[in-house]
Amino acid sequence: MDEIASNRHAWGTLAEDHYRHYKERIERGENRLNMHIREELGDLAGKRVAHLQCNVGFDTLALAENAARVTGVDLAPENVRCAQRLAEDFGIGNVEFVEADVCDLPASLNGIRPMLIYPLGGILVIGLVMCGINPLMGIINTAMSDWLNALGGSSKILLGAIVAGMMSVDMGGPVNKAAYVFGTAALASGNYEVMAAVMVGGMVPPIAIALSTTFCPRKWTLDERRNGIVNYVMGLCFVSEGAIPYAAVDPLRVLPSCVVGSAVAGALSMTFGCALRAPHGGIFVFPVVDHAALYCVALAVGSVLGAVILSLVKKTQPAEAK
Image (cartoon, rainbow, N blue to C red; front, side):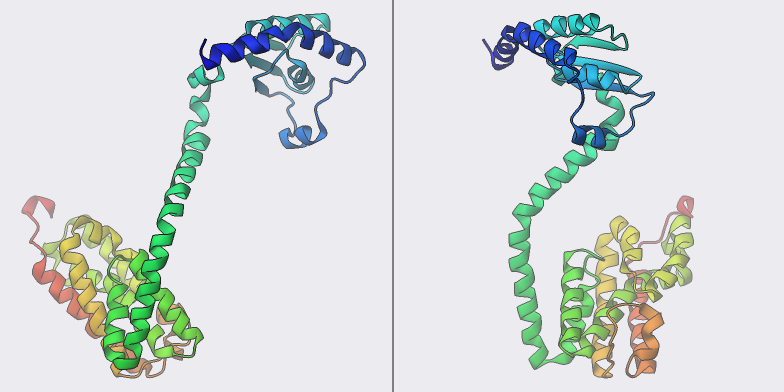
């Protein structure tokens, strides 16, 4: 006898005892749902309710007092028969009982699959994956931070180039975030120059792509040229993710071009002694940047350089794509 059959048999043998017990409780007026269950369910008026694993229907009948229609489902046929008798004993007509394995009810769950089952299952799977990945990523991030800290003492210009270049490696991914967190940590410790390099590095990719789509339109499709205008705004607002659609289509050309442009902008920012006391804000915080004019020069040089390299390495679009 398999596990399901054994479970069905075990509950079936108890059905008559449960029937007599719950019939007596209903006669004493004890057929009320638990207060906490009632609060969780809320108002059931006019609704159809499915009660899975309903046993002999004691709680199912209590639900029927508040809902328009209730369907009780149980694995054991003895339980279903006793539940039907219980409903007949007390004249409750807005309830029905079905013998079925709840695992064999896919059609009844179709409506909630995309809204509940798939998202919940996805969250659980990703949570488990993250539990396995987080320790490794913690080690990697710590090593990167230690390496960047070591660079800070030897070469500020090299440090600026590296953190700014990291901002363009994956456009909002773990490398980008490691550089950004390093910048905010430096900001908290009073080193404002690193944060300036980080932000200018994150602003370059969208602007470089926008410049390329504007001045070298033959390298891009019509949709890419149209959407490129938006990247001017996203870049000036320090939203690196504006470059993601372009990087996803052609990563081998877009990413290296943006990394070079960002690295040069970060190095220039350090060379000019630009300092930023805000962790975000893009062009809106330029007024509080030390040497703001030179900071604009660093951004312009990095963006133009990235755009030039990108336009040179990108292939010309075929005539039908224009």
